[in-house]
Image 1 (cartoon, rainbow, N blue to C red):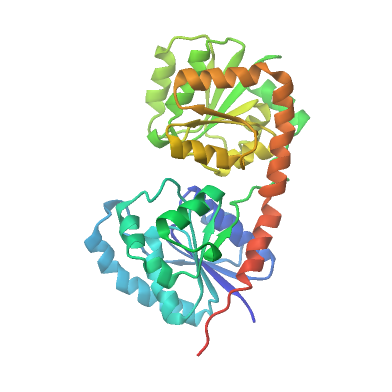
Image 2 (cartoon, rainbow, N blue to C red; image 1 turned 135 degrees about the vertical axis):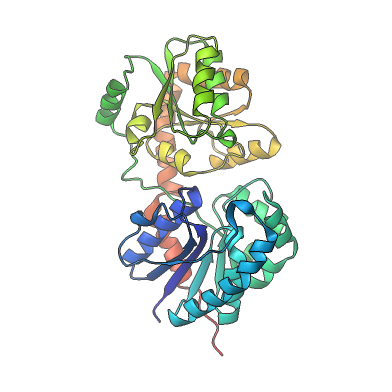
Length: 383
């Protein structure tokens, strides 16, 4: 039986969920599966899809307005359109990725008797009021066959907050290309030279959007609290907080240099130059940047604010001693990073350990192949 895996997502913007859908879809196509994506606008990642992957453009969520009236108005037409598409194109598996767009796809798949798998993309309980209402209704247990978790912490959340039994949860990873992101001594030498890094200078790195939830401010304050002229903080990214963060760097005292590199189309030179990645995002978990850094042989320092975030940080390392986990205050984070950077032997050992960890647990090829194999176990119900 030919398979047709249809991914349904709110948009193809530039977020982690969207990148996962694009990368997984490209892999599935190479394995002989038929693949399509249903998504609204914007579709910023469309050009990254391989030829042969069809995109069905459909508005599934009211967007920034978050209007319940608007959502109810578009719900029925969306269900009808999805039912027609699933039937005409012979869809065999529906994979939904964000709660905002999931409900119409769940209902349409139920009508068409197609199995559904839903990804848990967020952490820290249930973040939105819409999602709380949806999952409090227990509709997900009626419509969804399996739930996909990317970390053990997420698996625990699905069981605790969504009341999903363990046998209906699949543990996977967002995956990382361990061939593209890999330690390379020559690239490290070139990268450090291009970024003006002096011999012996220790490099901390932030790769993030300049948005409050990323809390780049904390990394800046921690770097200046180190007051170490032999260390430097490189910041890759851009966003609405750029002017604020640049002003903060000018105003803060401290001898640790801080340099803004802007957006980089290819972050590999920055990873190659770095000694440690600083992860200050609120609600940290195992995202693309962390995996790319560790695949490149760069240990990670994770800041936590409460007990839940501390557990997430530990889960990022699978409970292993693979990096730094520090309280999210400038003083605590600065102290933890300085201790790691000053211990050259430990730092060198961690570079190999984090690389080995990613190869074992998060290498894209085996991770995505396991998902492809799992899809093949799911079959539409027949009358």
